[in-house]
Image (cartoon, rainbow, N blue to C red; front, side, top):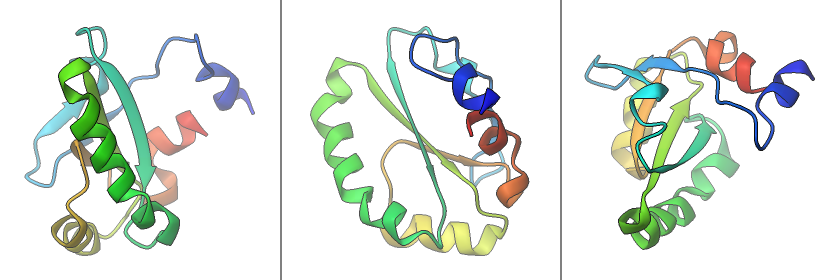
Length: 112
């Protein structure tokens, strides 16, 4: 419950450090405060509701990107191959990152 209160509306964000599929390290702070609205989307290749919402998120990104919306997809996968297959198949919107630590991902724990 502490994590949910710490990340509630109006609270400062908690840093996320993860990698892109290409291995590039990305920090959430690279995007926060750059006159962008950041939408964090926690998802996984095995999560059917997550996959079902990808078209909605793609539409949101397309509609509001010019107004500063930046989607950051944070995968809670632990299997790089399955994460890559899901990215290739569904092509989710925005920047896609993962710690590849599954439920043990710091970002998942921090954001509850």
